[in-house]
Length: 138
Image (tube, rainbow, N blue to C red):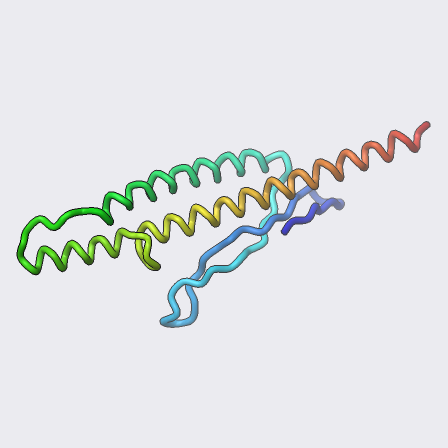
């Protein structure tokens, strides 16, 4: 999930983010995880930006419900079929707009949780190190 990296270089905390990439030809999108690192001083800024993006995805998900509940503009079969296609494309079935927003929302939540956990671990290690040095000097 996470680790704290401390060495001669700049301090970094590592975390795992849920990601999506193109799969083999014809396979569509594939969910995965990618490891990232961030300066601990910038981690909260990253978390805040991801929370803002997650909140925007929630707004878009709410809009997708309106898309998936539209009514047919006419009684002819073409209007009915077009309405069904729009509802599927905007809905929460796999591949739909709502489905994609929900999946992205969950991925951002997981990533935010992972960064927060890594930052907490880093702070605890930093405090433990400081405490160890203070005890040594007495």
